[in-house]
Amino acid sequence: MSWLRVELWTAEVVYTGFGTPMLRGGIAVQGGFVVGQGSLEELRARFPEAEVVRKGRALFPPPVNAHTHLDLSLLPLYRGPFPGFLSHVMAHRERRGLEGARRGLEELLASGAGAFADIVFKDEVMDFLLGESPLPGVAFYEVFAPDPAEAEEAFARVRRKVEAWRRREGRVRVGLAPHAPYSVSPSLLKRLAQYAQAEGLPLMVHAAESREEVAFLTRGEGPLGEVYGRFARTPWTPPGTTPVRHLHALGVLGPKTVLVHGVQVEEEEVRLIAEAGAKVVLCPRSNRNLGVGEAPLALYARHGVELALGTDSRGSSPDLDVRNEALFLWERADPRLLLRALTRGGYRALGLPTPKLTRGTPLSLVHFL
Ligand SMILES: [Zn+2]
Image 1: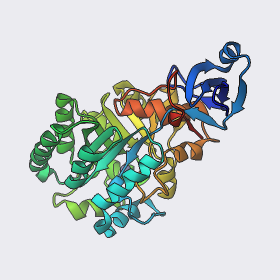
Image 2: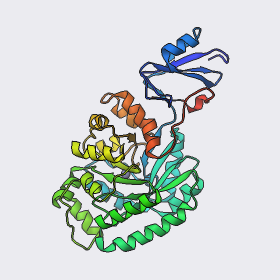
Image 3: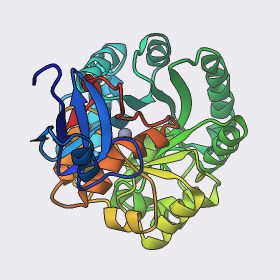
Image 4: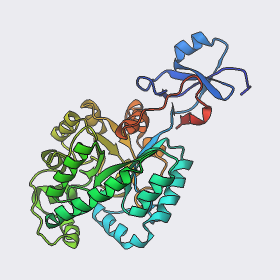
């Protein structure tokens, strides 16, 4: 590309951060910068001499990886039934921690991500992300406490830590991640949700990931009983309802709530999510590797649920490049929906503004699929 000549870059779908993704959109570029954006027709009228360059499937601002577990970046990749994954993480727990998080953050930066949402399990990883991450995002502190007898003590411990970390917020903000409806007692889920709402803290919860989760919540059946029994002495009382309805009843769904996976959902639950203004992060490659099924994208879209994309951990995903999640779904979904989830949906889930490709944006911030 010559320094002064203007080119018009287009792709199957273009999202510039304004409005919604366009099928016949583009950007005008000159000398290493964006000099205009809009529909290809308008750009052609403005720059009649410019050459049109096709850039493949999609062109967009930096994508968001809206669900990572950076501390699991040194785990071997697991492929198999969902209940075995928890055992896989346990079996490799000595590889979990700061070194993995450092490696993971490097990989995330190399992928060109513009922001991230990480699940943080260890205090040292929270300290690291708050102090050293050059990438903006939310570090969600994970709470795993299934025994209702522990709820009070666990809540007090979490609150103490979160208060201290919030004083150090900068580029990375602090959120709360009650792990899942089967691994955090209902009383604790309720308290955490009330606390988060009072403090304006974002919440991230793994929910409706597998059929096993649904069976355990609705009927108290299946292999998750064994997992529960490893961490709780109080016998499990199934709430007798599905994961999303259970979370809704406990007050967990709200505009600052982000559900992760959302594979096993019925239409009524999608409606509850939409009404609450909660967001959903899809991790399609992790879902494939754990054999849990596919999230109903079209159903979410029909109800206007804001979707984002995440890779999940290196334990269930081959890399941390979130663009590969969109590519994985490319033939199966409306590409405009995927491009929105990859960018605007992710920034909205994190409470961040979407960067724009507009006059003056350096080309290093233009991404492609
Ligand atoms: Zn996860």
